[in-house]
Amino acid sequence: MNINLTLLMQAVAFFAFILFTAKFVWPPLMRAIETRQKQIADGLAAGEEGRHNLVNAEKRIAEMLSEAKARATEIVAQDEKLKSDAVDRARTDAEAEANRILAAAKSEIEQEVYRAKEALRGQVAELAVAGASRILRREVDAKAHADLLAEIEKQL
Image (cartoon, rainbow, N blue to C red; front, side):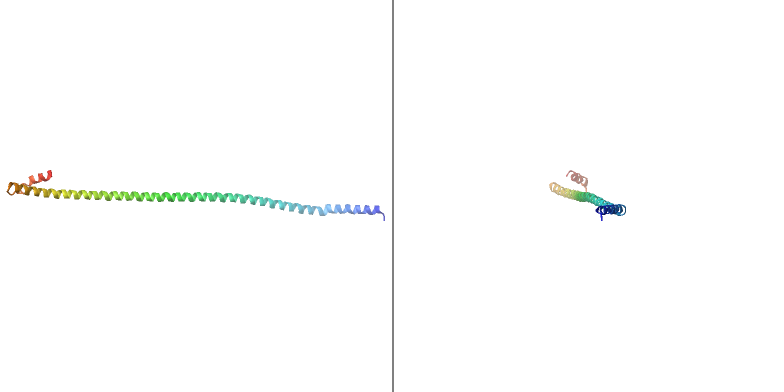
């Protein structure tokens, strides 16, 4: 056997193997590799999109929390305002009631003072008649001198 012929046959077999591999084996391998690369790229993109969505969700959660805190603060402020308004209304109502009671008491006192003055006037008139009758040493008729007694009462 000739080494050249063996070498030539091995070269032809190797060339045929390369052609067979390039025609039938290599394309399915390349499709599988490309498919796998595409799946990996899609997975990486989906992971990056998921990470981006997570960041956006965290931002929305932070915004919602700050809005909820602001709303809670607003509700507390409204409650405080309502409470202070209620206290002010109660204080105003109490002051009005106190003023009404005070006015009624003053009116009643004025009426009592007027009645007391009238009673004193009557007593003073009687004392004046009694004093005048003693001075004159005779009886002064109260019915006969009613006009005079009424005038004395007015002066007192």
